[in-house]
Structure formats: structure tokens, C-alpha cells
Length: 322
Picture (tube, rainbow, N blue to C red):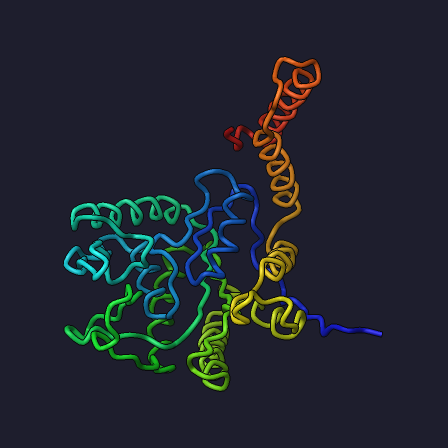
């Protein structure tokens, strides 16, 4: 008797190896998966949410454009002082906050520059969409903010971003991007977070429109655009409130761990799986707190740890830094 509906994974894209460089953009779910990716690939091979967590396709597309197009990027005029006394940027999350305009803008420039360094060698771009609802700044309706930064709701106008416009904008960029990054794989996921504020029906409609966007891009660009079914794994395979946090909206740590396991099956090459396992073992070794370093037992552990580190460096060409 079977008590699950297994989600069959699609054909794997160009698999990640220890030489891969990945950029991950998107919602809190992308952050969870991205943090695990940082631990799995060599230092400096992953750029994770340089603008902080992002949710809507418009903000995510802008970030992808900034990282891949010379001369494009955020502008300092969208820095503002919030009600909390801190300076923020309209197109970044609250991760980018400072006590002065200059310090806020310096954070923006630093984050974009660091992510561009990875993007220049990028082999995989992961984009996690979450909602097609956007917020326009009423003072300048050409500005679609990435985060409202707890400003009064009256400062913004919420609307659903038109599906056809999303398809056209993303298609134009992907077509250009294919020509400049011919070996790079674009992989979409859909956040399992449920927007209860839309109502459950409204939440499903929002997710459905995002799936239609992804499907349209896959149909147009073929194998260069992939989809990993994280949303379906939680909705259909796990399908139980015990896989949610206490708010019944966010996936639990157990759910994220399970989806991560399925993701590594799908996206990791055998070489990267072996590399990541050995790297994590070394990280645990070096994180181990030694109470009595002069004891014979501790000295033996230190010798064994160093031997394992040297073996790792010889095997993988020095990709591990303690």
C-alpha cells in the first residue's frame, strides 16, 4: 500500500559539478536552498540573493539583467529613509539597511559587484518565483518596489502583473541572454509558500499564472530553460500540515531538507555529490570544539583531521579553505 503520490522529476539539465558557478535569486525558499548550495560548492562559486529575498517576476528579472548586462544596475535615487530611522533601497530587501544614505548605497554597490563576479562565470541561474502580485510606488508609479519596508500601505498600489507582459519581458531577456551565455542553464522553481492574504483560491491562481510563465519560457526556449518541481513535491508528495511551520504557510525545516535531497538527486553530478559530502565532513571536523587540546586523544584527532584536509586538497585542487 502506498501513502504518497511521488513526484517524478523531469529530465536533469546540465548537472552541477565542483567547477560550476551558480547564481540563486528569489524568495525565502531560494534562500534556504541557496544556503545549502553555498556549502556544497567551492568558496566564491555561489552568489545568493544579492538584492535580498525577492518575490515577484519583475524584481527578479531586473536583478538578472543587472548581473548579466554591463552598464545596468540600481540607482542611488531609490535610497530612502524609512520610519525605522534606517536607510533602505526600494529595489532591495531589508537585508540592505544602514544608518545613512551613503552607507546604504555602499551596501548596494558591494552586493551587486560581488554577485557580478560570480555571474561572469555562471553556469547555472536559479530563479524562485513566489507571487505575481506587485506593489507600485504611488509617488512614482514607474517604480515597482521589491519590498515595502513596512512603509504605510497608502504609499503603494498593489496589482497583479499581467501574464502576457511577464512572458514578453522574460522572453526578450532570455533570448538575449542565450546569445551571451550559451552554456548557462536557467532553472526555475516555484515557492511553496502560501499567500493566505490572497485567500487560498487567490493564492492558487497566482501560482498558476507563474507556472504558465515558466511553461511558456520552456516551450519557447527548450532545454535551456528547466523547471524543478519543489512546489509539487510539497503540495502532492509531502501533502501534510506536519511539513509546515507553525503558521501553516511556510515549509518546515524537514520539508526543505527533503526537497533539498530531491534537488541534489536531480541537479548534482556524482562528482559534486562526492565533493559536497567530503567537504561537509571536513567542515564538521573543523567546527568540532576540542576541550583538552593537549590530550593524546585530541592530538590524534588533529593529526587525522589534517591528513583528511591534505587528502581533500590533493584530490580537488585546493578548493577547500579552512
